[in-house]
Amino acid sequence: MIVNVLLQAFAGAVLLASLFSIEAFAAEPACKEMRKVKLGVSVSPPNVVHTPVFVAKSLGIFSRHCIDADIIEFEGGASAANLAAVVQGTALASINATAISQGLKAKQIWGMAPRLPQAYMVGEDIKTAADLKGKRLSAAGGGVGSFNWVMGREVLKTAGLSVDDVQFVSSATAGRLPGLVAGQLSGVALHPEDVYLAQKEKPGVRVLVDLSKLVPKYFFNAYGAGEGMLTKDRALVRDVATALIEANRAIYTQKEKVLPIMVDATKKPAEAVNFAYDYLVKNCVWAVNTGFSKERTEWSIQNGVDNGDIQADKKPTYEQVVDVKLGEEALKAAGGSKKIGACAD
Figure 1: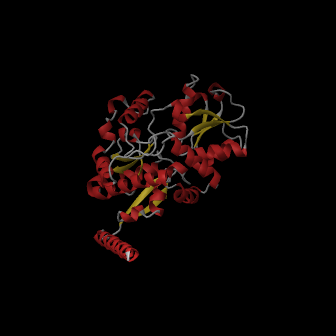
Figure 2: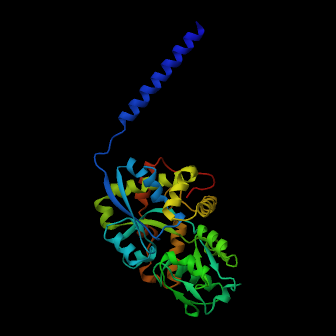
Figure 3: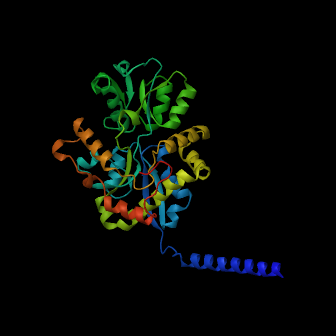
């Protein structure tokens, strides 16, 4: 009899739980329409660090927010095509304070990866930064002013050298790794998966400096939206930011699910992607929350002024670069601020 009572109680509990589940599912509003949006990736093919948008799409996170996302690839975040897409309102993509200071009518809406993930790799004949004098360095993804050019300049400064002391070579972003391995480049900023592959393909190449240690306050990558799009489709932009916050959190907590997505997006060997994933997670490169950091942004702005990239009289404020309110709204919709391990940006 006791057994029968327990079984009846268990059955009742299961039925009640089922009813609650059905009610919860029924209460969840269906999308009245799928809102289309284009999201830019600043490298073609993307590096592992750039894959949150692919994760958000593949795991159905965008769909849950009624977003139909089309991912497009650019040749560098500072490329004319990337910046034009943002200012014209045709895409959400990477933008930095320098572009905004130069008149780009846009604001950052989500800090995808506040910390630098790259290392500056050099050929086997380079022992110190001083040895780079007269050598060919990468300016992939946009030439003068591109990320590789900027990082190369930072490395040269440690040896008292300037950009005039070397030859910067402009190329497609996909040419960074092959250029170093083939000996056509003596220095290039490479992402973790490419560091892994470079040392595997040509053991003599080496890490000259970890860029996160060379310029620890440099703000690496933030997504932005044109002012027109922020005015016209603010709710959509906010929901995209919310979905991307959720995607980054999934990256930190669901390695088995996201690794295949990253391999497919980057077209890199699984072992290299796994190496990069572990490095990025360990070093909290991806944001867990909005990713915004007033300290990092203001440091990067001042660095731009010091280097002549930003005119002193056109130096933007943090609030002119970042849509702080939109970020806070997106974070609230994602469940508020969280910490995953030691990561809390």
